[in-house]
Length: 233
Figure (cartoon, rainbow, N blue to C red):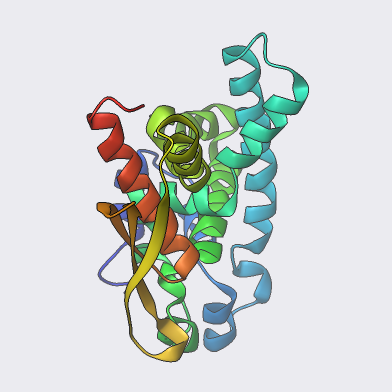
């Protein structure tokens, strides 16, 4: 995986050239890889993730503060939490195909770690931390604005897809809906679930995920996009 997906390719994808490329490599290195390769533990992404989380919180707070000048503090806090939570960052990371570049140990690879929300979201924050250390706040802010704070309408729809769908169907359309498990495949440690969502008897959307909850979120998002296309939103 390391030979196929190089750090140079990742730099091109994120639009930033590192002066110290070792920082980028560290940002995509999972502890299972350092343990397996007998590399010092502090060479994994965990410390960079800690730093990136703080940078992301500051940049997203400033963004929301300036964009929503009449919104009270409680609503700003709630909106920021939905934007930078684990599933949201994982959604953004998958837009970058970031999972393909992560250096994992064989055990973690075998249990589906490359697709796990907790890992890809952590790596997303670690990349932010690496950019901040290498180039300062300005390039980190550019990265966050481009890959996390852009297309917020669709991303917000995804972040809150299940609650938004419930509010739309039961509140506005006055109808009932339900999720239905279509299938599950793969070994016990690495299952993939397929879920469909119906409004009464009409199929609105389907989704796949490593958990039923993730699959339901994808299905709800597809349903919202379909209903928006019909002018229901």
